[in-house]
Length: 485
Image (cartoon, rainbow, N blue to C red; front, side, top):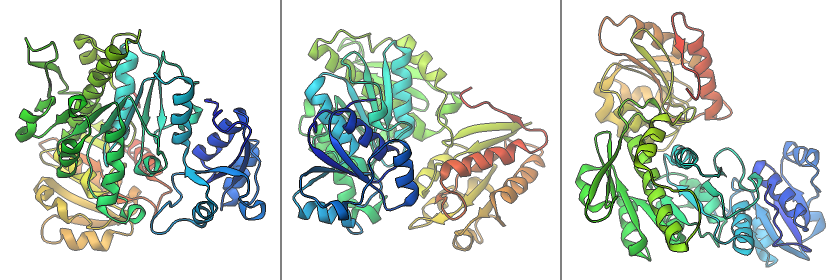
């Protein structure tokens, strides 16, 4: 655990008692702060009490003497309107920050040269975060990974300038981190999302941009208009590193791809201006054009980290070894629920892409397979539904609809793609597998890529993906692929 000493001897309030809130409370207490915790849910309060936190209603205690409110990222800060606890804190002149801000302040005070790679984006940030951490470990670095992926940031090992922290950040977390200043800041892409929490696309994008503007070395994707404009605005263009998987943008980028081949400019200096770093063809965990972008982003982050190590004179293991990097890319196990190969039955491939909760994510999955897709989709629909995916409909052999979006999606598919209303995921897996296994030729794919949130039938996308895996495992003739294999 990282002990937060920046509020030692002062009283701090923590609201929202999930993993980040409880870890913040314990970190602050270990660092000498007097901490009072609250959550609107009984379950949250009980979890905090079991962890040994001091739980009490802020309304009863009042705000006098409270130095800061540590807010969980899931609690509305500005939209659709600030939570009552935010309004009360601001009215009392109390600053509102998050657990990542505590991490940043502790780093600044105790170990300012600690390398931090922070990664954000609408899509792909978890995979890229995991990939950066994997590459660094394979190159011999002591790596801690957390934030919006896996472990809350304050549960990581104590800050040290001899280890690298790879942190995934959501827009909600960035919004609560005013002193954010990572060594490397990666912005993968920005497309409309979380408008309910940010009000407008412009505000959502501006929050993401803070990561690039405040990083010592910003790494920015050029694949969408918002991030291209962001790259043009970055305050220190000489430190900016760019990457793209769009052929027309390759000439403007430091890292680019041709198919599955990944290239870098000036890898070995100006004498060799363009170098092929690796070819990720056949790497199941990096299947699809979106994962090419993720791999390019990871390489850009390592390049930026190398430059900072050299500038600061830090004595750390090398970040660069082309042969080791290529091998590390091939050994990346991937993450569950993100284009995860679940198993095969003869020529039929089963893919779990439950993390695809919007059309933009599902587009990447559909683009990864040229034909014979048996597509399982549905759930709680996002704005716009699946109309943006119509250019990929010819690749779909049949669609299998589940959940609350069934009627809406049936209307979009009608006359364009054969579809079946299955209702449940279990029924959809059975129907899709049966039809795919009847195919006499080709390479059929049973693809769960819902383009929807999961909350109508599941607690989260992980539960939905695990259910898909269980249903596939129950089919005759399926050989399952072990996770991490």
